[in-house]
Amino acid sequence: MLADLTGKAAVVTGGGQGIGRGIALILARQGAAVAVADVTRDEPKSVAREISALGRGSVALRMDVSKQEQVEAAMASAIDAFGRVDILVNNAGIGGGDWRSTFDVNVLGVVHSCEAILPHMKERRYGKIVNIASMAGHAPRRAGGAYAVSKAAVLRYTKGAAYELAPSNINVNAVCPGAVWTAFQQSAIGQSADDPYEAFLERYLGVIPMGRPQSTEDVGKAVAFLASDDARNITGQCLHVDGGAILRD
Image 1 (cartoon, rainbow, N blue to C red):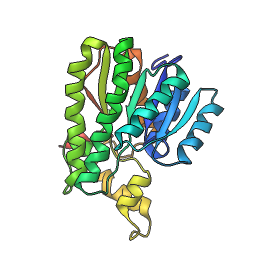
Image 2: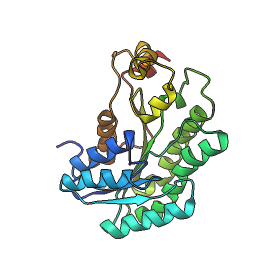
Image 3: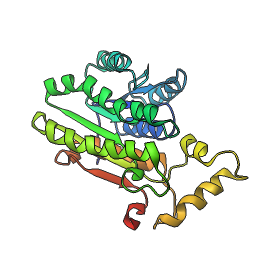
Image 4: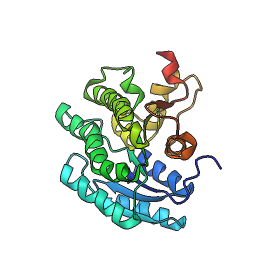
């Protein structure tokens, strides 16, 4: 079975909703125990219960990725819960903040999470890190601003970390989702549209050659592949799950 994660343990940041929830559930379906980490209190508990219902180990962790101490404590809790962490998915992110808050979460959040788990992965000489970036990090189609620049930084960090960590048998890759209907997109559309979902489709379908939006499960399956040993010789790469949108740039 491709993307067989049986016996693996994962941490998914921002796993309480949206793309993060989709990733966490796919990893669990592929066999992994999953720690669901999120800044909210109740949402990661809900996702953890869904994972437990699948017969997989799960734990809910509350942490703000911009706070290094919270990240370190949460990663230690995940290791205690599962005995190890094989997979880290850096999904937590924001889109509507100012430059400082956006970089604190979208860039430093990735750095904090990696730095907290890397001593453990290096000691075991095994690890899979998947950073969730965005097609906006390659070519923003509007002003872009802090969000697009932060995602470009995540892509550059991914390549540098992949090179640095290869001797420790740690793979580092990125996934760039395309148009995924989540609360993130709902807030971007705003309340002015009579039908927010139709406004979402109108905004994106014209730039997606395959003519359809992507789902959280689509993103989760790409992450599961990169987190599996089927991708053991893939590192420093960016996998686009965007229906071909990047082809138009």
